[in-house]
Amino acid sequence: MKHFDKTRHVGRRSLSLLAWLGRYEFATLLSILILSGGIWGVVELADEVFEGDAQSIDETLLLSLRNPADRSDPLGPGWVEELGRDFTALGGVGVLVLVSLSALGYLLLARRYRAALFAAFAVPGGVLLSTLMKVGFDRPRPDLVSHESIAYTASFPSGHAMMSAVTYLTLAVLLIRVQPELRLKAYILVVAILLTLLVGISRVYLGVHWPTDVLAGWTAGAAWAALCWLAMRWMQQRGQVETEASWAGTE
Image (cartoon, rainbow, N blue to C red; front, side, top):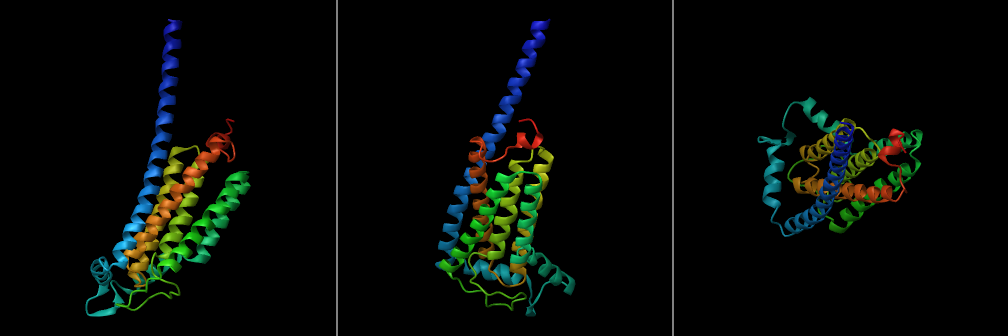
């Protein structure tokens, strides 16, 4: 009987280990797919945009969010337009800097110093990539409708969409990598995705970006976040960044 209980216990541990390995291998494969798919997606979008193949759908989607009788008037009452400005502010430089510093402060207070150092380079690196892409592509802003938000830079990719994806998704995957509870992982990721989507949609609604600009920003930002996840996992395996287990106090 004791031998049977011992065998059953070993079997359960083996199944748990296989489940744990399967979960992380799946996450790694998914991140690689997002990274490679993101790179391919941005290249394809850029090709479609600058050959003019995406112009028709861009114009159709942009105008669908405007009053047919008055292109200067976004759909919906005034409070909806104000809400759009609120959402777009979530992707502004000031808000993203504040969010990034708050996340860094959290990691530092939690004594995850190496994770904080990683985040201090990961987020600005993505923002720099966004800036270089905008300068390189230099696509004009939409001229079909009036702009309901001030815009200074080029249009492709959307800086707000990409920087919000870079900031929220990258910080989310970094926090997930040091957070042991599955429900908290899911919550952090869902909130990050929701914020990123709201920012991008608001940019089209306010008339300052073509839909393909936003799609490219989302795609590039997600690819950057996937790259950061892979990099942090690689560093954790080598003991260079704190792990989930250290957070739980089991190491």
